[in-house]
Every structure is written in structure tokens, then in C-alpha cells.
Image (tube, rainbow, N blue to C red; front, top):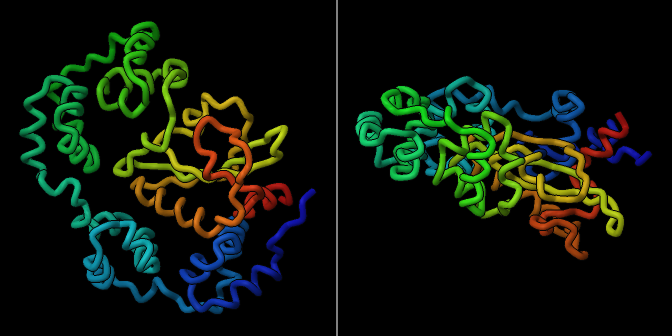
Length: 303
């Protein structure tokens, strides 16, 4: 059994180097994650300055006004970001000005736009930004109440035939939304999308995303660890890969770009441990590590 890298004493010693949790998280992320997973953060960070208590709603609003993207807010003022995120509805409110992608739409104009279309698929394909504006604000159902629900006629044969028209899931989702949603609802996506490529280019930063950490076992390369992002389930992402894998950790992000920035930070921090051998995957070999850089697999084994 592999030895546990971060013992309690080592975690306390590592945390003692920092006066703020945000610095501990940024500069010693594996130790921070290990302490968090083991429920020891409050213990090892007891000497640190309390950051959240000083953030009033007005102070958070003023701090958020300095940034135009959530990812910049999170990276450059993490204590404020975390404080806002821990309070229901606060992060969404203070970051409302950051949605530049949707700035051309209001509730009224997007609802008027929706009235031009008879199905959700047509609305999504022809007015993507208005559709997503309503989706992100929980207004889509009311705006689309007049539309026809054509997905009820889809069965596995018609869905499989429809899916053959597209080479990526992203394209399928955009161009034939009713079929895509029907397939998702019926649990058929993996079966009918097997021919599609599953590449980074399909990741949508405006949609909710997942950051995941998994382990592949290869006969010639041994155990390799991968960090990655997806808008779909991990199972859907790797339905075409022949190698067996084990899901070690998954983090959900309301905004996909936040997941992408976290992935990039991990890749940068551990670039010396990246796998340089022959490709073992159809896609995503550049995010493989030669060992458990986050210390999460050894933690699970020790537990």
C-alpha cells in the first residue's frame, strides 16, 4: 500500500507557512486538498487570519465591480469570491455585470425573440445567445411555453439516424436540440454518439462544467493520472476509450470557464510531472501525469 504523502504533522507544518487560506490553497494545493478531503482545514488553518468575516455584502459588491470575468474575480480575489459563493444568491448578484456574453439581451427582448420560433431546437439553432440568456436565468420554460414539444416522437432508431448527421456532440446539441435532449432523457447518448469525436474543442465555457481527476491503468505505461474538463458526464466523455479508468474526484462548476482555469492552474503547477510517452488515449494525452500529483488516490487507499 502506498505511503500517505500528507500526514497530519506534515499538513500542520505546511499550513504554518501561510497566514491566509487563499495563499495556502494557491501555493500548496495538494496539501490544501488533502486537508480539505480529510476535514482538517479548520484544524491546520487555525492560526490564519479569518478572511470571510470582514466581507460585508457592500464590500463584496465593490470588490466584484473591479472585474469583468468571474474567473478573474476568483483568481485575483479568492477570499472575496469564496465568501460570496458561500452565501446563497450573493455571487450571482454581485457578478451580474460580468455576463458580457449576454449584454445585448434583456428579459423582455429575449422573450420577444423566443416568440419567433415554434420549437426549442429552432430557437437554440437560430438565436443561440437569447436562448442561453433565458436558460441561465431560469426563464426558458416560461418563454418557450408556446412551443411544440416534438421530442415525444423520438425512439432509439430515429435518434440513432439523427445522430449520424453530426461528428461531435456539441454540433448535435446545437443543430438538433430536441433529438439531443430526448436522447439524454432516455439515457441513449452514449449508444448513439459512439461515432462522434470527444475533443477539447467541444467544451463550452458558458455552460456548467466538471473538472475531474481520474486514473488510467495501462499495460505498457502503468498507472497514469489525468486532469480534465467536460460539459457531460465522465462516462460519456470516455465512452470511446478502450482503457479502464477509475474516477478519483469530480468538481462541479456553474461556469465552465472556471473549471478550465482551474485545470490550467493544475497543469502549470505540475508540468514537470506530465507524461511524455507514447499516446495511450484517443484524445487528451497532454493532461496525463506520471504519478498522483494531487495526492487524492493515495489518500483514498490509506483510508
